[in-house]
Image (cartoon, rainbow, N blue to C red; front, top):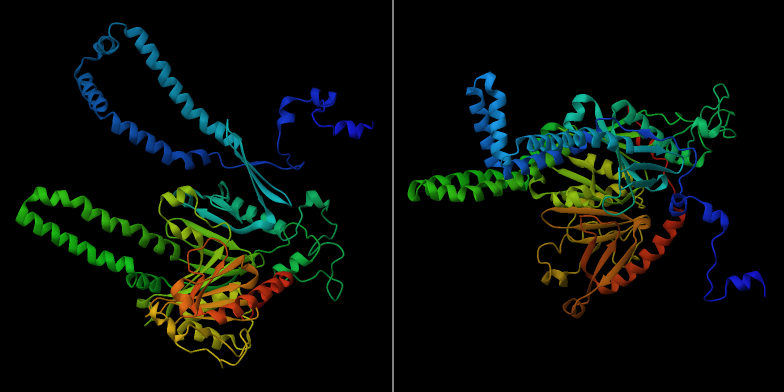
Length: 590
């Protein structure tokens, strides 16, 4: 019987080889091997303190709250000690120790000194060990981050899966020039790799290095290029029409070219649009949370005064916590909106769209092209007279982490392309991430999408669904029973490149979904909808907040729409490529 047959006989286990038996236990248990030659770098030494001060403050607050009586007693002892003659300090402290220990002051003092010393040693040692264990590395495949003293953790962000790179400077970090780099990848909650704190100059260099490697660049160490080799522009063998280096106009040119030398990807920024501070503040004053605050604060103040006048101060004090809690619940919403829109400006770089914003925490986000799964343009009822709009983009990997969900902050799921601005700015934000709407007259289609109603923007019903002349397909009149207000506004359009949903009557919304980003779709119909020949079409993409479904469509039209979407999604998935967007968006920009 052959050896292979003997090895595959049931019930017989193969003995480990002698080499495997002699191998160290740690190497046999290692479940993941890292690439050789990684250059591990440390973060700034202040990182553990900068990240852990909230935890330390919370622990001290809990201890102080639970030891209020002990603290009061210690303060009283300190006051008594100040009145004692300095020559009697030792006897007084010894008497207190005898009283506290029950008759053995020496042992009690030694034990208290040891415990206090261990606490001080832990406070000084644990941050140092945490900093020593926190290292990061970057190569042509991924970004690596190692953390943990006893429980080791290794996080790997693959470069092709990077959705965005965010540089954040908290308020204290802005003062001392320190920040963090967040590498967002296509994953679920808490999938990002957070590197920091680092100096501002180091953050910029690290972001540039990651973007260059993601675009196909290679470091001089890995490529073997030496100064003076002429390794400028793109790699060897790539030349332009005159034999010189190929001109890099955008992300597509970098990906299509051979690997380029480090530092070739320039960081020149081309300004695109800026959010006016006056418009931002006026838009906040016209928002629902601020209006509720302006109504709730005087209302509760008057109620408290009336209650104190008629029922006494005690009754007013009983109502005070509730009166304060409701307005305070709206303050974080208003503050987040103000902070995310303050100083907002967008620029185009060869690596992608770069957006900067922040009032206290300064954030710089770089969004590579081809990462957006959907775009939503919305306008509240109070913004309609000013014709202000907001533009949001949905990216993979922007789901809430557990800590963010606990804070009740849902805006982390969206990437804000424009907090508030005029219509042309909102359309420019859409154009940046979805450059081709797949119709001959995109301006007319978008105008119908933003302000259209009933059959506005709809072409002849005899035209085939999906043809450019068909335009929007409106919800039939028989759907008004299920949606009496918004049915006149709701419509869907199928272009050659994307699906456009026109939704909501009072708070207008337009959602644009590229075919290649649709993961799946569903057609559903309840019993009442089936009786009236209606159906709902829902698209499944990444986990996002704005709606990606349209209800009460004609059932026959929905069947034809779903088949057309399946065919076009397959075709667009095969033909997908990065657009030479930089040359387009910077055309005519000074």
